[in-house]
Image 1 (cartoon, one colour):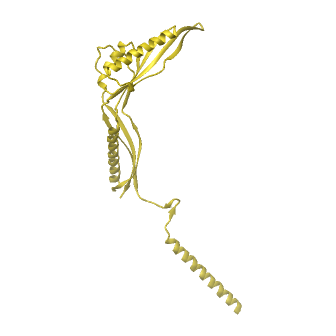
Image 2 (cartoon, rainbow, N blue to C red):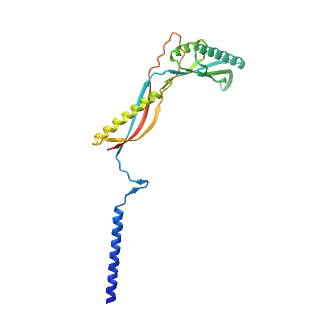
Image 3 (cartoon, helix red, strand yellow):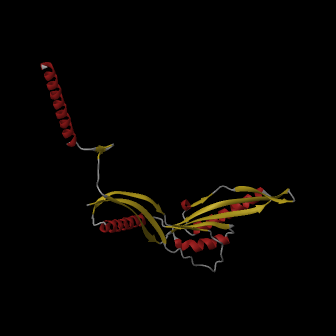
Length: 245
């Protein structure tokens, strides 16, 4: 009988100690900071917005590609004609004060010409051509260069591009405009939820569109002497993360 009482007392004592230990561990756990996989959990409210800004400028530079072409049967004669036309055109550009570093002429290209009739291949001769790229830092000389190219018997103008030589200041204006648009969007969203903006946490620029206009140029008569390049526009897009108060 006494043995049974002693055993019951020992079991109750052990149970009491175990319960006290569990309660102590639970209390200690309540005082710990819960963390995520990468550190303390952050529940800061934020707003993400995307916005675009733009700026306009007047092009002050032109990029042109001229193609000199001769067709015939004798390669030596054709190459000489292309070389002569190229030399004449380079002299014209020099007289118009176009720097030689702004001119690049490619090697001569030779292409056989064929005609197909009744399933038969007929050799027609050769086409010899050379491309000459010209960068004009003075837009005012654009029409004169085109007219002189006509006089020098240039085959065609293959490409014309107008651009802003130094777009950095325009990009700065476009970025400022994009950020202003982002702030406006964020403040509208915050006001709609009865909150306010505390600060900017992150800004990402997604890319920019350069101020370039491309087009094909058709040879015209010298009577058409006015070319208007118009106004060019470039844009910048940003993503911004704002922290709310």
